[in-house]
Length: 131
Ligand SMILES: [Zn+2]
Ligand SMILES: [Zn+2]
Ligand SMILES: [Zn+2]
Image (cartoon, rainbow, N blue to C red; front, side, top):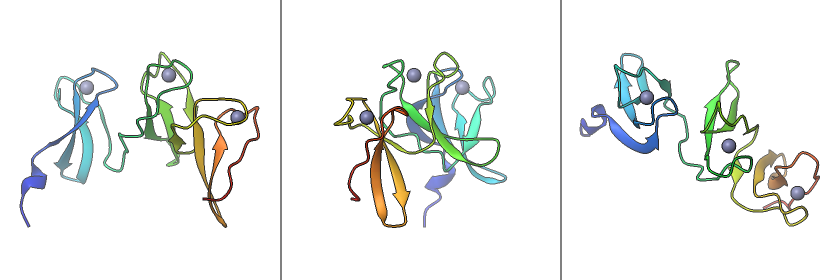
């Protein structure tokens, strides 16, 4: 057991507010993700934030989709160019294009039978087989 975890860990993800790097930090209330620009920038989010979907935003093409938690505690995935780009999806995205409509992302949907991918385009009803 080392105390390394007390050192802020770089996440390699830019702060959505100021573009400095985000870090995993330990505070009085446990782990959280905060901006390395603190105290100039007090951006923070919960430690279970998933920085790395590495899925490009289908709307603006330049942003990445990142996990967020809504005020009501639901997680969703939104473009990191928010508020310039307001794209968001309710399920974890995957960088695979839809075989039916060529939409650039699919969404991972858990069902009682297993996991399947559905099209990220709400007008398309493509569903993969259970994987
Ligand atoms: Zn910041
Ligand atoms: Zn976007
Ligand atoms: Zn589709």
